[in-house]
Every structure is written in structure tokens, then in C-alpha cells.
Image 1 (cartoon, rainbow, N blue to C red):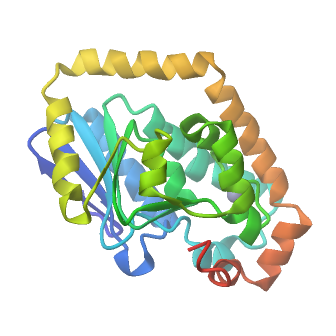
Image 2 (image 1 turned 60 degrees about the vertical axis):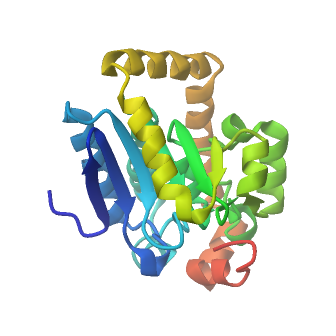
Length: 266
Ligand code: ZN
């Protein structure tokens, strides 16, 4: 398969799918997300692949959705158009990573922001380097109700999720590890190797057993209401796209709104 915005590399039974627009901090364009889903589908159907790493090339995992493209192509979307676009590419694609039948590990360095935070946290494990930081500043910068998939309280706990989203501030890899959102923090120079070692270790177990473990743990959080809560938030998020706060940010330029506050939002 030929890709332009991601790269795919196998090491034994482990497939590394990497976001590959490093000059744009791996900003997620429509094309990148479509390629990402093709790559996940292909990994799902390949019996030789037993674990998947989701990583980002360059200094940053991902700065989030490509807001330049959003401004150019979707600023004037109707409710119906935006709903269709975001339901497929942001909500359904994310849930396909969540439901992916094999273990997944997000390998995170640098910025892991907004849409980047969303897809990293769809993975089963997160391994971060010391340079990694997490943030979802869009309540501040765009007047949006967080990102489309409100995975935050499920991976951080409700109290930290509120602090994170209300303040728009960054959380360091160390703090993310302390609250259990990240499995391991390692030096930047050791990130790829540590993640690969963990993936290889996982890949040694019989595949069907792993699949059932994942299904059962995901069902545990489904029983707690994960899927209903995420679906309900998607609707709420769409409402925020019609708010004064969002429309003002859009009229001023979405990408500019983010750049205005680089410390808190990339
Ligand atoms: Zn949105």
C-alpha cells in the first residue's frame, strides 16, 4: 500500500504505523486520517501482525487536527456537513482504534495535543518520552467542547480531566504517568526501543487470548457507560461548533487562534 502522510513498518509480528508530516507537527489532515484507517484495517486483516504501535515521526507525536485545512475547506460547513465529517473521521475512526482487535501502543514524544491526545488515548497502552506533554486547549482557543471523543475522564479521572480542560494547560509525561494515563516514561533516546520491546513482549502471547482480554476490558468500561458517554459528548461537541466562542475563533482564523497562545496550545 502506498501512503503519503503515514509510514508503515513491520518488525516481526509488530507493525508500527507512524504519522508522517513532521514539518507540520503531524497535524492530522483528512488524507492522513483516511490513510491511518486504511493502515489499521490492513493490520487488522493481516494474521501475521499481533500488535500495533501508533507513533509520530519527528519531534512531536501530533499537534492535533490540521486547522489550516479546516479553515480552508470546512469553515462554512453546515451543521449537517460538519456532523457527517466529524462523525466519520473523528468519532468513528477513533472508535475503530479503540475497538481494534489486537493490542495497540501509542508511542508519544513532544506535543500530544487535542486531536493527537484523542487518538493516542484510543490505544491500549501509552508509552511516553520525557519530552512528551499532553494538552487539550480547545475550550480556551476555539470555544469548542473539548475534542470530539471525550476520552479524558476515562483515562485521567473526572477531577483531573476538569482541571486539564478548564485550564487548557499542559500535563507533563511525568504527571501523566503519576495519574496512570501513561504506562511508562523513558528518555527520548529510548522511546522507540522501549515501545518496541513492550510490543514484542505482547506479540508473544497467543493472539486469540489477547483479543479476548482486550474485549473483556473494553466491555468492563462499556458496562460503566464509556460508549454512551462518548456518543453523548459527540453531540454536545457539535453544539459547541455553533457557539459564539467557536464562530468568533473561526472568523478570526482557526489556526491563528491556536498560534496566539503557543504555550498552552500548539
Ligand atoms: Zn469538532
